[in-house]
Length: 178
Ligand SMILES: C[S@@+](CC[C@H](N)C(=O)[O-])C[C@H]1O[C@@H](n2cnc3c(N)ncnc32)[C@H](O)[C@@H]1O
Image (tube, rainbow, N blue to C red):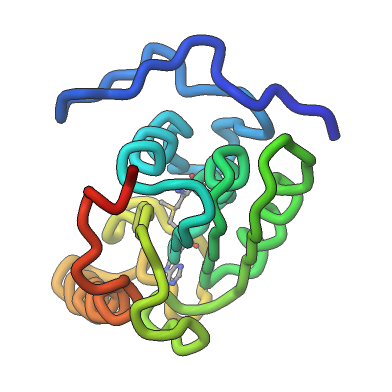
């Protein structure tokens, strides 16, 4: 599929307050997946905190917004979602060719157990967890934390944070980004 690889106007954000007048519809991005994020967000994070060929993880993959940006920007990436329908949709959204070459993997799984990823192998985590008990992402998939009440949700996120810490490369610093 031929796609538009870049936004029409893009300027890297340089403050902590970000505002995007349009949500962004380049490549295969669309706002159709409920509660997905604007592709400007992962684009800014990836460009600011990684370099080409780095490994990026999004363990709450959704419709694949982060991995689409990783692919367009020449980063390798792994995406995980508890819901196989989300993984299927991401695979469809990732089915395009672009100028950059990268390795992109998606997998159905639970963000609290990433045992298939080695310790200290990920350069950057760029992810967007569900909102506790607000938007439910499935009817009854075991492990879907969007169903949990606030306290239980926080407990699960703690486990996700531990897994994130395990897989992230230790002492990675911004000077590595050159
Ligand atoms: C806010 S959405 C991510 C949207 C994504 N950033 C996008 O732009 O499409 C959160 C995702 O987390 C998934 N999810 C919920 N519990 C999970 C878990 N325990 N492990 C992995 N994914 C989970 C949901 O299925 C949902 O797709």
